[in-house]
Each structure stands twice: as structure tokens, then as C-alpha cells.
Amino acid sequence: MIQIYKQYWEDYFHFKGQTSRSEYWSVFLINTVISLLGYWLILYLLDNLVRTVVSVADNSKAYWVVLVTLIFVTFLLTVFLMLNFIPFLSISYRRYRDTGLTPWAFIIEPVAICLAMAVYYYETKAYETNISMPLWLIPVLLVLVLADFLIKILPTGTFNKI
Image (tube, rainbow, N blue to C red; front, side):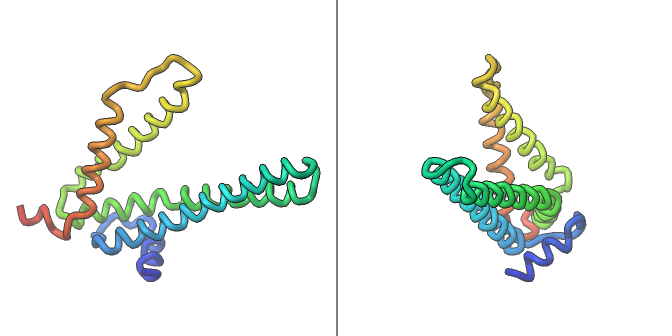
């Protein structure tokens, strides 16, 4: 699994070729575990920050240590997620190619990402303005995410046999 993850980073901009199901889902699992650990650490540090503020004065050394650590961990997780964007797109693209789909079918993933950002935008602006989310947005996003998931779990060459 470590070798697969190393290969994932070496193929950062490699959009040609194919990626097997095991390679894709191994990378997905490792990235998910790293992200969840990072989020857990951020929440733990936030909890400690709040407890420190409640228990002592704002200018205490413990407060600043927890605050700086929280900022540092948040920065590292953000950099990790940003650095993962392109290699994860490339491994996803290679996974689509592995199933035998035309490269044009990969448009599903960028469209789903854009729709997810639109949902996030509408959700964050709902309280500030009277902007309401279009009714079609969530069902379309769910269909695209489901299609993307189903394509990624298909065996190698599924669409080559049709």
C-alpha cells in the first residue's frame, strides 16, 4: 500500500495510462485517513484552546502554544489537501480510462466538484441574503456523485466489452 501511495505522488501530472481499482481505493483510503486525522487534531486543538481560554487569562503561555499549534496544523492540512487536488484528478482520470470509458466521460467529476462548490456557496449565503438554492442542484449533484462512484468501482475494461 505504501508503494502504491508513493507511485501516486510520482504520477502527479500523469494523465495517460490506467489505474486499477485496488490502486485507486488504496490511495483514497490513505488520503481519507490522513484527512480525518488532521480534522480530528484540529478539533482536539480547538477544544483545548477553548478550555485554555475558559480556565486562564488570554495572555497565558498555554493559550499561545495551543493557538500557534492549531494554526500550524490547519495550515499543514490545507497545504496537503491543495497538493492532493491535481494528483487525485489524474488518478481518477486514469481510473475512468481503466474501465474503458471515453475520456469525455470524465467530465462528470469536474462538474460534480463545481456543483458541490455551488451548494456550499448557497448554503453559506442563505443566512446573509435571500438567495435560495435552485431545487435541481442537490439531485443533480447526487446523481453525478453516484455515477462517479459506480464508475470507479467497475472492473478493468468493463466498457471495452460492450
